[in-house]
Length: 185
Image (cartoon, one colour):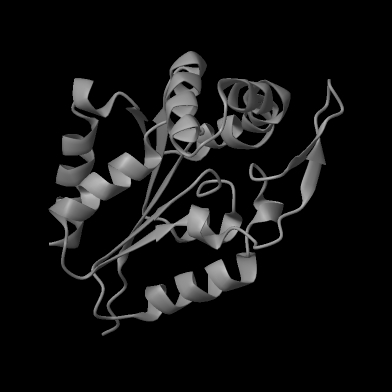
């Protein structure tokens, strides 16, 4: 009898709490779990995009075209065949956008957070990486918010569960953990 790992796909907007939710779930299921962070699959030489309003050119990180999809899918397929795994957690902007991931998922979660809260988190995160306030906010307004509306937000309708990105202010993590626990035991 073949054992298939239980697959959880976690999507949501930039800085919505996807990685935090995935990390917390991974802490609850430390054994026989494989975690995929789609950010680790960015192309070394990503394409560029032209902002729809300002026409400024940016390095693109908010489109599936920026990912090494062949490598991601090969690693994901290998994990699906790994009978030692009980759980696969895969998170990223496009976890519910990419058919191959979405169709393999047993549980699809969308982490939702208001755009202003996501922007504040993004400012803090990117300024800690050395970007200026102006660089972060300009890029967010020029491209990130457009890509979110175009590619990320519509995927919420594929979700089985929508979790509030204010993870410490709600029971979302516990609900997801309990559901997954019931499925993998």
